Amino acid sequence: MALWDRIKESAQTMQAQLEARKNDLKSGAFRDASMAMCALVAAADGTIDPAERRRAAHLIAHNEVLKNFPADDLHRRFEAHLDTLTADFELGKVSVMQEVAKARKKPAEARAVVQIGIVIGGADGDFDATERALVREACYALELPPHEFDL
Image 1: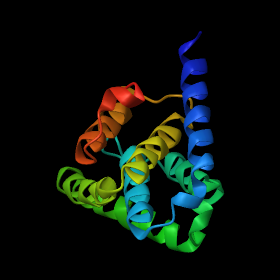
Image 2: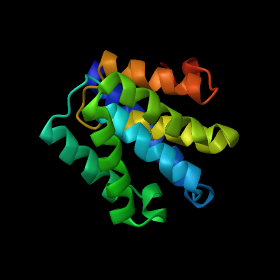
Image 3: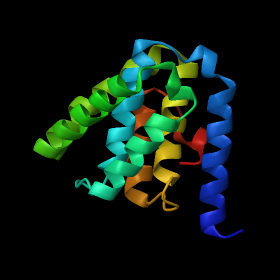
Image 4: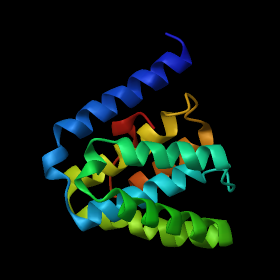
């Protein structure tokens, strides 16, 4: 199977698993951690390409699981995290990763946050090494084993 097909299949599998748990993913910690994860993946290489920003914002607005929350609130949180990362990526990454870590108290939510990161990372068909590394780092912040997600 080609790499693109594996990435696409993995993202689809993760999305299906998220949708199956949609009703369990309504907490503020999940919302905050998810938006932080989306911002980290969008800015994984230290820059935020306008196309990547639009693609992530589109996915956030149209993701079935994230429809548990008001779209404008999610967008505002996502943009605030991107602003933090843009101002100083390394320092911002620490702050944004702390937001991701808020979901670690509930393992189902923590796993869902990682899955959202994988879905966002694979959206362009190229879940690259930098994006994978950030999602792996988020696994550690969430106290989850990265190998559970093939990271």
